[in-house]
Structures are given as structure tokens and as C-alpha cells.
Amino acid sequence: MTDAGLHSGAVDPGLLAGFPILRTRDLSEAREVVGRAFCDHRLDIRQGTDLSVSHDHVSGQGLSLNALSYGAEVEIDPGQLGHFYLLQFPVAGAARVWHRGEEVDASTRAATILNPDRDTRMIWGEGCRKLLLQMDRHHLEQVATGLLGGEMPGPIRFDPRVDLTRPDGLRLMRRVMSAATAATRGELWAGRPGLQEAWAERELAAELLMLQPSNVSHMLWREARAPLSREMRRALDYLQANMAEPICIDDIALEAGLNVRSLQIGFKAAFDRSPMRYLRDLRLDAARYRLSRRTNRESVTEVAYSVGFSHLGRFSRDYRERFGVSPSATS
Image (tube, rainbow, N blue to C red; front, side, top):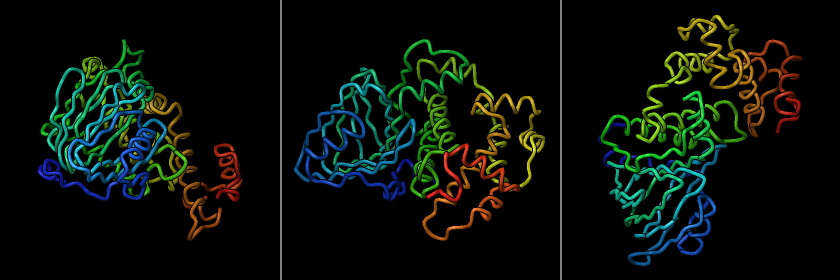
């Protein structure tokens, strides 16, 4: 996707289309259902009566992805969000947002982020459609604490305007679009969460913290740490691509360009587990996904070998330990 494509709103209109939670022309129903997904809010039609609400929603542990449009021009007043941040990318149309004493004209050139402890009022223009990343406040603070190596000095507050004409804003939008595309394809948040989902949620929070100016940006830029390094990304890509192969910790360190000790420290900080334990859990998550298929199901033996286990007894033991059921009982 080109920058011009982003600025002109040339975004896949089918993002999250397989996960509808609302299609309605009724204002009260829209207020109730959208409110359950986010928070209580006032919703009024400003012009005309042609309300046509479309809301698609995918939920993770610490965030949700949403595609939302109202059709008509509407005014939305949620007050304070309370327990979550809300990153809003207009992919069609425009909106005006008042937040933290600022007024932002949102479009495909400027997104917005709402802080949980500041009042908000918005006008979504007719035909406005947004891709929304809702992020739990506690999840974001946990990731920030890990990046800083210590507690936050206070609430994290972002600048409300996300400039999509600059590299950082574009990179942030691409990451959210990529996550939404993966969810649409069933590659993320398609079932019970595993390591891939945990990593994706952590990465989205870290990217938001590193790319969007906030009151802790100076601390984060100074304290950037190993889990976001190129070396750690190479290690994860290597494990994902080669999970079925016989891998030892020296192989991972060599591929990542790290010594074994640095690799172990990076995995401990990011996942609270060793690289080899991460690999084992990655294989188990892949096995559970394949055993849960409703069509073209494979045997337990085929699945075990295909994800890198060479000992069936150990596979069954580890699988039961991680998921509480035997591989044959997975449904």
C-alpha cells in the first residue's frame, strides 16, 4: 500500500468484515451495542435520518480491533473513556474531534488517539468510516513498565493528533492495518489466544508508545530495550519459520546475531520464559490450532511430527500440561 493510497483512503473495505456485531438503522440499538463494546455515550444524528450503522469487532486479551461507520453525520459524546485508549484511523470520510483542549480535523491524513482520563466530543461526518484500535489501559501500562524497567511516573497521555503524513504516523497505521488484515484472514485472534496473539498485542502497544508523542516519550526513547530490537525480531521470525525443524538455542542465537546470554535475557524480559520454552509453546499452539480444525483434520501423530515433536509421549504430556486436555480430546 502506498502513502498516497493511505492518504486517499484506499484501504481494504473488507477489513474485519467477517466479524459483524451490529448492522442497524435504529439509533437506540446503535447506542446500546456500540456502548457495550466501548463505553456508555451520547449519540445523536446531526443531519438527515439515513442512519446505517456497521460495526465489526475482533477482541483480544488487552485490545480490540473495530471497523465502525454510522452512515449519517452523528455527534458522539463519551465523556471520559475510563479504562482504555482509543486510536482512530478514518479510512473514509472525515471527523472533528475535541480532546485534551485541542480540536483535530481527522481524515486519511490525520488520525486521533483518545486518552482515558480526558473528556472527548466528536462529530463523524456523513460517510465517515474508521478503523479503531481499543487498548486496555492496564495492558499499555504493563508494556510501558517493561520498556522502562520501572513503574510509570503517572498516567500516560498521548498527543491527540496522529500525523499520517509523517513516517511515524504512517508506520503506526500500517501496523494496525496489518493486525486487522491478519485478524480478517483468521491468522490472529481466531480462537483461544496463544503466543502469537500475546506478541502481537505487546508489539502494538510498544509501537504506539514509541511512535506517538506522549508525556513519557523522552523516557522511552532513552530506555529502548532488547525485546524490540532487530535481533529479537529475527529470532522470532526464525522460530516461526522453522518450528518443525530440530532447533537448539545456539541456532537461535546465531540466527539472531546475539550471544546465548543476551538471547535468554531478551526472551525472559519479553515472555518470562526461555527461548526453548518459547519454541515448545509455539509448537504446542500450532498443534492445538491444527487439531481444532473442523474439516480436513489430521491425526495426532501427523500433527505432532509436523510441528516439530519427535517423541509422541512427550508431546502428549506437554500438551496436557499446557491446555488441560489430551491432544485427542481437542475439539
